[in-house]
Image (cartoon, rainbow, N blue to C red; front, side):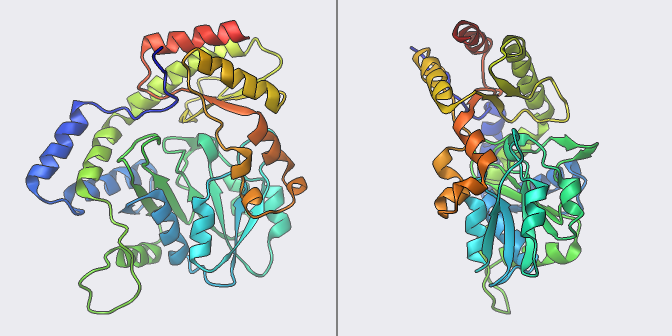
Length: 354
């Protein structure tokens, strides 16, 4: 039985030609392609400055340095995220303050943020988890420094503005499973010239007249070349994701025992993930197993053990919404590499299992 993968990057001969062209130039370190990708991303989200990085994690680390986070500071983060956020905070010697997400949603709860703000609070990292927007306009009212984490949300909008245009600094990830990919890679975008200069200085680490700790976080030019090809087709990638969602929705909206997102072909969302929420863990796990038997791979977006409060051994009673979401949700394949036959197979399986 052929396996339908939950995610795989969309690549063709254009990416291969772009990499070959860059390799033939014999200029592999950041050059024209990296600068082009910086311009593409910053213009797309209406930013002034951009720095290409070796990963989204590197961009996060550089963001906290630029914002002046220091030992003893506190940085607020949601529990329903990957550990890259936790790592970046610890790199700075700062303390993570972990809060719950909104009920029946995936992003940080502004009310929980408010409870945790004190004199030590330096910044908030606000991820648009799984491509779903956080209430970042409400969070901005707290007048704290914001790192807007758009690792999942390139191409999304919130209240008419592109996600990535709200934070003091925004970071993106171009990992293999992201909306566009460079294999590994990331981007930092800001409208603040001071932050930009700090980051640009930190990333150019070698052959400098003055010494300070700097970081080898640069994106190679051939990786950036892949990203530029991906960026050229970004609208078509989103169109394919919305099309796939439109095939799942008619089947799922008839079911009273579940919730699912996105609920419609909403052009404000990038359709990075298609999520089903079940009534309990047992039902979710059974459904996942039954799809696997039909050759359809699904993933639990963030496993319960991966919640930050679990790693930090914080009381789970303080994080009821993340506990619920992590135990009851499943992500269907929605990547643009899916063929018509694969989409049809998944849709038929959904009809049979419901």
